[in-house]
Structures are given as structure tokens and as C-alpha cells.
Length: 265
Image 1 (cartoon, rainbow, N blue to C red):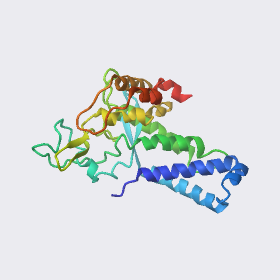
Image 2: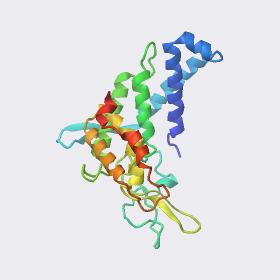
Image 3: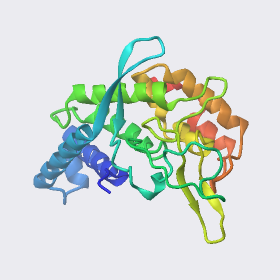
């Protein structure tokens, strides 16, 4: 598997926050982190820049038509990296019957499905970190126009391809490439079946838990989508084929208790 991992992104984000802190207040940083030397900070800066270059190299930009029939750019990060990953074995299967129930469905992987919507929440944090810090002060770790382009294109992809329901019945594709096949379909030795069927809400609620509403700064169509998803979550449901139970509503209210407009402040 030649995919970019979420750990790759997390390490880069942590490194970016460290060098941004050191750049913003070098004296305080030196007092509190005396073991971190200038050579270490140089290596961290270099690592952050390389990871951003990797992100750009692994992002496929596509041209599509929006709902108002305008041409727009959309982005899928690392679309082919996980094509042969076991969790994606049924990314191309959109039937409602569990693929490992009798009769077993032959493997149906998809091509270019990208990350699942749950793991994809790392991209929200990545974009927020690079938007805020990559070019602060003396830092120049990622071209601002590239960060902006990726943010706009990813937001367009969420609103135009991953959102597959309606504001009355919001739903999301399981994969950020827009494929809505099964994710992580497995069975235990006792034939306990788990997984995420097409538009599965246990996976789709990652739109809320992952803070995808923050991308509304680049596409305001995500604001009503966010609010509709929040209403669906607060109604409560227990989807089939998963061991993940519903979060308590008070936690969801804490995570997404305000309309998405407030995220943009």
C-alpha cells in the first residue's frame, strides 16, 4: 500500500504548530523548550514543506459542473492510494445486503475512491493548520495560493459529490472520491457482520464529528448541509451493520451546537 497515512498528516501538523510557535515568540519558546535547537527547527520546517508538496502531488484536481451549472474545480486527496486496501475491498459494491452474508459477494474494489469520510476529517485539520500558520511571520512553508486552491476544491467536492442526500434527508458517500460502496465490511469467526453500507450514517456523521463545516469558508453551500446533518444526528438512529453506537446527544450538541455560520468567525 503506497497510500499517505493519517499519521503522516498528523506529524506534519504538529511540526507546523511547533515551528509557528517558535517563530511567533522565540524567547518564550527557548525558555520552555531549551532542548529544541535551531537545527531541529530547520528540520521541522523542511519536513512540513515536504509533506505539503506530497499533499499537492497526491491530490487530483477535477473539473465538474456545480448545481447552478457553473464549472468548478474539485479535489480528491490520494484517490488511488487505498484501492487495494482490505477495508476498501467492497468500495465498488453498493448493494444493501451485507457482502459477506450468504451468498458472499465477490470483492468489488473501486478505482480512485480516496479516503473514507471518517479518516478524511484529517484534511480539515490539515487545511486549518496550513491556512493559519504556514505563512505566518517569517514562515513560508506552503504557497498560500495552493492552500486556498485545495481548500476551495475540497469544499466543492464535499458539497457537490460527497453530499448525496437532500437537506430534508442528508446523507454522505462513504468515500471522499464520491464512491458510495461499502467500507470496512468484515465478519468475525462467529459470523458477526460489521461494516458501513452506502450512505451509512455511522460513517456519515463524521461530517459533523470531523468539523467539515469549517470548509464552508470556501463554499457556503456547506452551511445548510451542516445544519441539516446536525438535525438528523439529534433525531437519533442506530444503523445496522456496525459496532459503533450513537453518540449521546449532549456530546453532539457540544461538538456542533451552533449553525455553521459561527464556525467562520
